[in-house]
Length: 169
Image 1: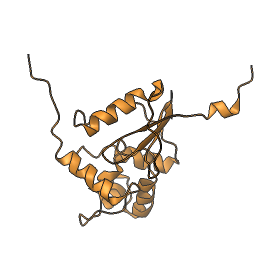
Image 2: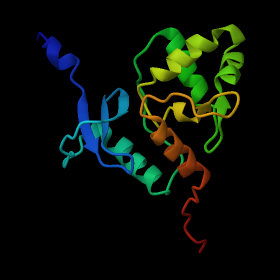
Image 3: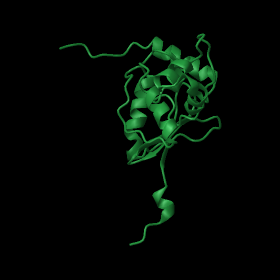
């Protein structure tokens, strides 16, 4: 049986509402490939595809301060260096920040600061791969693909996040 090549690359999509505007989640059974802020209005998805249901629920929980952890499978597409940078981003703790220079040093070479910053800017999985936690060495808010106002909102959200916990029985 011959497979249709167009179906091999088809990703499931969910458009969800957030305090930062509409967010597009793309992925399949191999994991989420992108979480991007949308500038143009699109209708919100009523029936979330099964492959994206955990991601959508965990993002909703993040925005409502019910979680700070994401457990769904990620499948970002990028070069080997980009993948390395994105893995490094995932080591920045919740509600903490790092600088581009710190990132470059953690990658093993302070000279890769520009390349690391470029890879950071190409991160396809906003929020979960926390590129918003990278700021200038002087503490300044530097570029963010989703807009500086979203970066500031995310950092403020995380620093003020009091997670709900069930009372002990």
